[in-house]
Length: 505
Figure 1 (cartoon, one colour):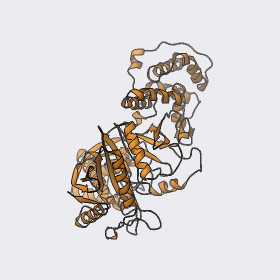
Figure 2: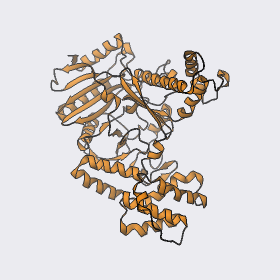
Figure 3: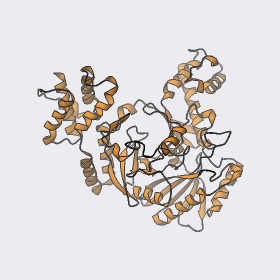
Figure 4: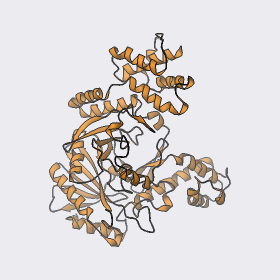
């Protein structure tokens, strides 16, 4: 039977890529046969050359999943669940992964994280095949290149969902999608049997590091507190971020503002995000240098970026941490009603998003100033994406987007194609007849049709739509700035800087 050949192919792949031991080979084979309801077996030879060329398990895993569907062992809707279940049978246990990682890290931290990421890819936890379906491009903006991804792998979340989730403590098991209890868990729509994380110590607390299955960028991962405790940004948070870049100096690490509308999608569980690449904001230079008499050894500037970023660089970790904490505390309580900045009302409104990286012995901290106030004109957030742009992005603008990498909802893949058809005249435009999912794009369609002044070719339509998305993403970043790039906003920014002892050089 061909299924026996498929099982042998998977076992060979696991020996080559997942450290399946020879002594565990028969055991793993029998576990797989049990899942496939097989009680007999025939040995088959494998084509080693073909299997050695594989970098992901799709070709050895999919035939086994197909067999399970075809023979009624699982339903069509259980494919992902069953694939995870089978892969878990041929992987190292979590403790074994942690041991291998620790051994490599003791010799070379960078190689340890490279190994862990490679293991996540080859075990199909990081879904590189699905990620390849995402649309990705760069847009040349006024502050440098921003990056845009239409993420077809990930459902869209609105701000109300995130706020509700933040209050939903202790309601289920695991309590949220990033809890340590997810390791090996498969329940509901969460499949984490192949999740493997490694323990790390941050600020004297037990945390762990894992990679994101639907990565937004190279080596995208999260550091997570073992305790399910709400997110916060305080002096201890800064120390933890600095600890992380000491542990892994090739990654940046950042903490979302711990507030709805300007924070991340999981506020109920303390965690950071980071990975192995520079974000567009990181590449932005100084708009102007600033100095502090109290911290003369800290190199500081306001970054030439869309939102308000203070960049600090210093080799003295202790003094740098002290300064970041001082800025955080000051912003937490700072108000300037002339520019709609109010620190708190019935809830806290001001927060920072700190992002830390390391260059040789120099620590670099980018501090993004955030405020989550709402008013009648902007019920979803004064410094959030404005209503006219929510057809493109309505979710919270977390640290990844704030740094210039937009993760747009997968619905846009189909919707933007429909917009293009109106520009090429393939579809006749009738505002009253727009479908429910296209009605949100009414303003954009009419704007593009007015600007195009006639029928466009498919290529022209595609470029026009993409240019409009690029423009909107830039505008959203400008929306998030608490101090706008105009005379009033610049003066207000200088006023805040003066309040914390900084003046322009």
